[in-house]
Length: 253
Image (cartoon, rainbow, N blue to C red; front, side):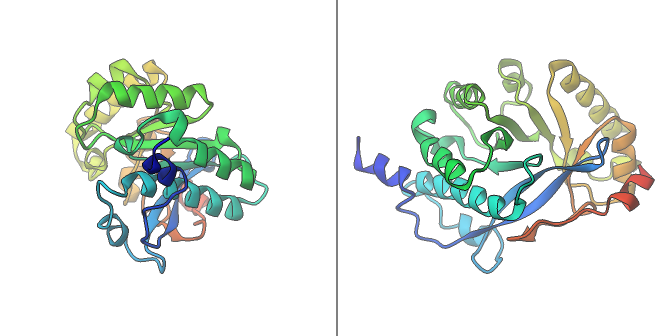
């Protein structure tokens, strides 16, 4: 095994301190929190860019490893005994050279903290050119190991429908550009309506993010969207879990 591989597994070669904020994803139909998404932040709550700007070709493997471990460790301490809420962790497909080798540190963290692996969702963004064969290998390996997968910013990436035709993740997060102002835009309403129907037919759960207004939430609920995320529901909380105000939100839905 190469020295680089060992450094990656041990989370070495990434020296920037960071922590996590958590933003809830709610299940409107079940009236509960479905998951919390872990979002990288500086050690004192600084924006993600303060950390991401230090990631490059030499340390992205270690950064990806450390993010997974940090998210699991913090979520485990915050969730307590609640094993019904999932954790969504963003990962970088180009930072995974071999999925079974690169998952070992993640599994060790979950075992050490007693965090159920069935509650971990690996979320990726197709906003960069990827080796699709490599990506599908990662996603299929994760599925075989019992993890769930999600595609972020669906509708704005490189592969789009072609990717979905080859692999159906558990969740597809619709790009927020489709959500913004949907309550006053009939074109967006029609696009989201048919996208949700297509995803349902494929067995993929649609999730709408970036919800900022009551009007947007109302229209999405009418279109049958159950999983929602956005500032209207709750902003990310640094090293803490935000509590959505269900009653006021569900009244308008």
